[in-house]
Image (cartoon, rainbow, N blue to C red; front, side):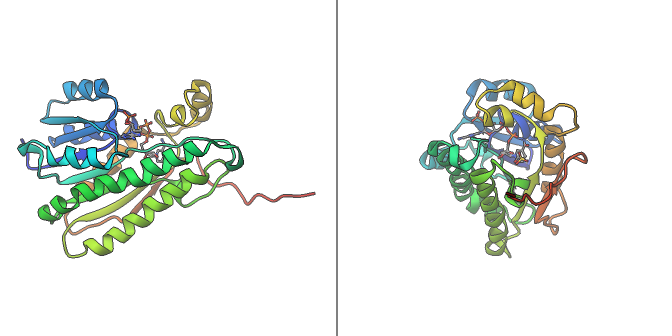
Length: 251
Ligand code: NDP
Ligand code: 8X3
């Protein structure tokens, strides 16, 4: 075991899986969670560092609490929590969505994230200097666009929760960062469109999106800075992405 342990939610795909590989490359021990057990097992098999896997739905507060309470002794002193598990659904306009999809985003991106934070916050404080919480927000938390509605709102929650946590954790040594990526090619759009591979390919095609590895590098960077440095927010876009102008309804 090393003295550095990262606890990563949503490690079965995208940013979370790439972050697991990045921390493993640097010799960190890992606690990896997600709902797809077979993917967690496959990742555990490839990493070559001490890795504890837990099949976990972050929406289930009791299961989250139990998973943390039952961490094997060598994995208990978590140094870095990466709150990455999340999703967007319902890319259509607000007036056309299923309410259940809004609830799923709030339950996962907001409630799930606070469930895991609450379960680990006191052990992170016990570590103190050098410990960190890295939350995965989004550009959607700051910049509105059609079809973002509740997704963007959940990421605004992640941003403000991150900043507010900084205030409460002042003096404990625990750092908090909100990483806010723009367009990145992962399974994100496949999930958002409920399995439409053509839509995902169209979004990421003919341009140069961020990769999961790009964001993993930033997660690792903020978690391994000298202990006296806290990056509060880190907004990252592909060079080939920017904002559109204001939309105007005309006669
Ligand atoms: P992926 O769909 O590739 O990965 C999402 C991960 O979240 C999966 O590992 C999934 O695991 C996990 N997850 C989803 N719901 C739950 C749940 N209820 N309980 C536990 N784990 C869950 O997408 P990304 O890697 O792109 O997304 C990671 C984060 O990055 C999300 O928070 C997303 O909002 C954010 N983001 C993504 C951007 C992008 O353009 N890709 C840009 C900005 C932010 P499993 O299904 O096995 O549970
Ligand atoms: C995901 C990035 O631009 O689809 O958070 O909202 S975007």
